[in-house]
Each structure stands twice: as structure tokens, then as C-alpha cells.
Image (cartoon, rainbow, N blue to C red; front, side, top):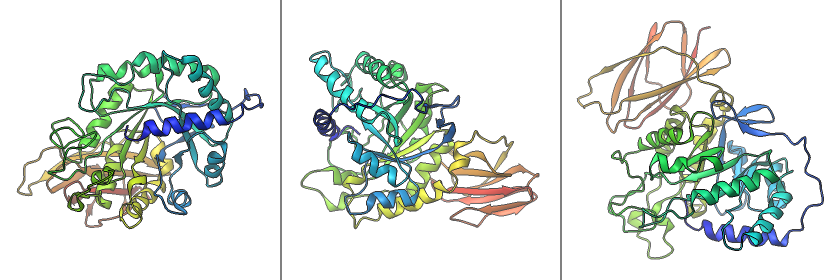
Amino acid sequence: MTMNRRHFLQTAALAATALPVTTRAFAATSPTIHPDRDGMLRVRGKREFILGLYQVPKHDGALREAGEAGFNLINRGATRAAYDEAHALGLWGWSALGSLPAERRADAEIRMKQTIETLRDHPALLYWETEDEPTFVWNEPRKQRVPAEQINATAAFIRRLDPAHPLYLNQSPTNLVSTLQTYNPGADIVATDIYPVIPRGIREMYALWPDGRQGDLLNDTLSQVGQYADKMRTVAGPHRAVFTVLQGFAWEMLREKDRNPAMVLYPTAAQLRFMAWQSIVHGVNGLVWWGLAYTPPEAPLWNDLKTVVRELAQFRAALAAPPAKLSLKLTYHDTGHSLDRGIEWLAKPLGRDTLLIAVNADNNPVEVTFEGLGRYRRVESQFGSTSFVWTKGGLREQFEPFGTRVWRLSAR
């Protein structure tokens, strides 16, 4: 999300100028962090699935709550003290460095070099970010805010100073795949931010199209999240990491004044759960939430999001693993509705068991039988609905619109 990020980058740059250049030599033995062959990040040799935050809510103890809930990454700015705080709570961090403009580049290089040298040996640093949404210019879609040449040249500069940490680039959900791919030399991790919980009739505001939507695909439902994940995998190719940046705010709360209380619409727990697990089904390597700084303590969203992340975090090792091979046949049963997108699913290894993840990408209820499970003896719902019917080799379930199911399948 571009909103207010320029202010952040300016603040980070000023902070960097106030920091002394570190006198410590950058250790050549610093552990390399890089995407694996399928894009999953390897951190100190271990595959890691990322559950991150751009911000936490503005109340005391929120960062500690994030660590306890199972988040493992938080945006940290440009100071070692901020990274020390994260590290003490078991969190990694990242910093946005911006990019090097053609004009006054030498001054920008000095500031960026100071920040990199200050932080590059910190054990909590996971990756660097350059610019946010470089192709996005509100109301002028044919323009690009920061050209690919500038991002790619900046990336080369950063990598010369710090080859041990990857580079993160968040793209807006719009623009052609071919346009976004021109930025790939400057990115090891490619992300997109998609925030589809938007009330009908919302007044014009930054980052929304005239029809009141942020995305521009024909599908304007929650299940567009999976489609944008697919788009970014096409952009990134098979070997870069792909993250989705998910909604942690109500759009109306982004207005600085004249808010309409009737238009304050937060994602529900069920919607948060669906968007997260659908992203996983579509093969992302990490999830990051934006907008918690605009979410007041009395809103239910923070507690709902912590609940969803706790559910995700208990399967972190499984989510980081390559998919499990599972041959399924899906047989649908008539519910009186057409079948539009239907059930999307993914299997992951869970020790000696298998984790089966399924989401209903339809805006209608769906009833389906998963066949081909004959080698399993037991099935256990991991959270939520337990209304499934289990017979030898088959699992029958009714899904509500945009419903999510996660089952543990055991052959023992």
C-alpha cells in the first residue's frame, strides 16, 4: 500500500543520517537467506513460511502480542534498537530503503549505505525492501511512479553492500505481467497487496478505482486473492518467493477526516481465514498483513487476526514443506446453485500424516465429496466445522460461501 509510505521512507532516511557508520566489518560468514527452488525462503538452512506485519496496532504490548500469536516478521525501520526489540521477541524484521534517483544520487547512496552497514549484521534482519508499488500512480494508470531501471540499479547497489539478504518488492495488483516482470532483476521476493473487503457505495478515496474496487479483475469477490497470487507467481517465475499482502484494516478508516461510520467494514475472522488459506492453496511462500496502524483497539480485527495466525503458526513446518502428492477426485452435490469456481485444495506433509487444506472459492454454498483417500484411516478437523462425513476413501463436506477447512489425515 503506497499511502503514507513516502513519509515513512523520508523518516527512515533521516534516521539513517543520524546513525554513525558502523565500524564492525561485515562478516563474510553471515548466513545467507535466499529463496529455495520453489520460492520458500531458506533462513540459516531451514525452510521458513513467513507470517508478517507491516505494523501492529497502536497500543502498548501489541508487538509482544504479535510474537505470542505466531507472527515471525515485522517492519522495523532503520535503527538497531528496533531490531533488538524484535529479536528479543523472536521476530525477524525488514527495512524499506527506497531507491536511488538519478538526481542527487550520491547523497542517496550515502544515506542508504549508512542504513545497510548499520543493520546488515543484525541477526533479526530478514530482507531489504526498495520501493512499495513502484508501478502505481493513483488516477493515472498509464504512468509508473518509479521506473524499473531505477529499482534494478538500486538492487545492484544493495547487493554489492549486502549479498547475504534478499530483496523484497511489493507490486500493486494491477498492470500487465510483462510490465511487472521488468522489475524482477530487483527482487528475490515478489509480493502484491490485495484488499477486497470494501463496502458498496464507498466514496472516492486513494487507491480505489472509480467503481470502488482496488483490484481490476472481473472477479471482485474474496476469491480474487487466489487469482492475484497466481498472477504474481507468473510474474515471479518458479524460483522467486511470492508473498500476498492481506487486509488488516477497514478502508473507511484510512480517511483522515469526514469518515462515514456506516462504511467502516473490517474483514471478519472467517474472511481473514479464507484469504490466508486460499493464498497458501495457490502456492504463496509468505503472508504479510498491512493496515493495523489504522485499526483502533476496540475493533475486533486484531483479535480475529491473532486467532487466524495462531491456527496458521501451528502448521508452520508443514506450510514451509513442498506439497504432498495426493490424487483426489472431487464429486459435487447439487445445492440449488451453479458451480462457479468451486473447491480449491492443497495437501502438505504433517509428520507421518497429511494436512489437507480446502477452500470454497464460490460465493455460494458447495457440497463435495473428496475421493481417493483410501490409504487413510482417520480424519480430524483442525479448527472450525466438524460436520464432514468420513467413509473409507471418501470425505464429504458442506462449505459455506468462502468457507475454509483444514483436516489432518492419518494412515495409522
